[in-house]
Length: 143
Image 1 (cartoon, helix red, strand yellow):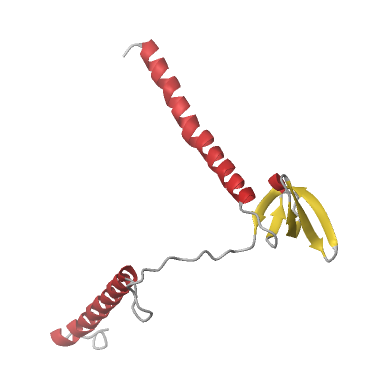
Image 2 (image 1 turned 45 degrees about the horizontal axis):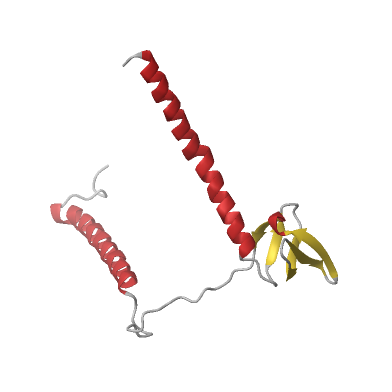
């Protein structure tokens, strides 16, 4: 290849590297922050970017009221909420065919595999212990 083609390939390569190393992760962080702001609810325990812990008492369009102590509320921008501590349990959809005592097929398969691997390990250990006895060689007799 000539030098001008190599220069173009190098520039395109650098652009691709910048995209995957800088632009995509930043877009992902922005999406997560927007999702966090949209999912805020009254009663959520949060941490602001300034390090203030509080409980959301009221949500407005661009701001929230945080109760930081009993009868002490502050108004904070939604975008200043860095993290939530409240864990919401989302209802899981369970297939109607399964009964309470019955395990899902995937979990049962994984447990069976683990038990089989454990049994195989025990069998190998038992065989290893029997070999010296069968051959008549014992480590106690040698010094």
